[in-house]
Length: 233
Image (tube, rainbow, N blue to C red; front, side, top):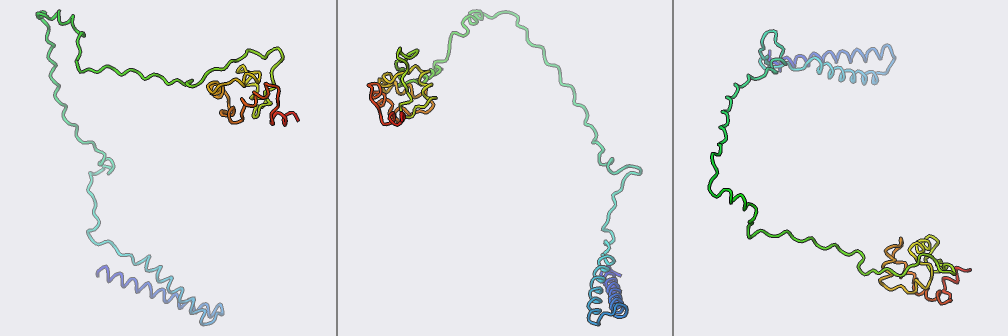
């Protein structure tokens, strides 16, 4: 009998058993549980389909064809993993390399050799270019000039630099540390001196933006600016 014929017989048997189980289950539900005919038939059909599919899948799997499974021969008592891990035969050691020939020993000095050794290092190729000179470092203080500073305020005391717009207590302290205590010092700043001071302040550009020089000229002459009037109120 071929595999196909055996599978068909097995499937028919499984579905026949499932049919009997479905009929028996429906009958028991009608007799014992008092179910209606339609309810019992429905449950019987479900039992028939589930049982038939399950039995066919479990019992009717096709068997492997004869000769499809091969068994590898192995040495009696030898584990397959050990047989696979057998190392290949080691190669024959290479012949030792012949010993190097002894270096030639200089017997005597050649004519003119002493003169050549004295001139060593006195010549060079004409096409050899000299190393380029290093570029001069850029001047970071270009366009700046240090203004006149004081080591301390004059006899009358330091001016209240906070009357300048944008100058608070902290910035006033910074200006005093740089040597500026009076309005007439700030009023004399040139553009180069403004650049020097500006690089040493935390908030750069404030001198020109807030007009310190114009305000300092007015305050140094004893006048008042709009900002100083508001500060005194």
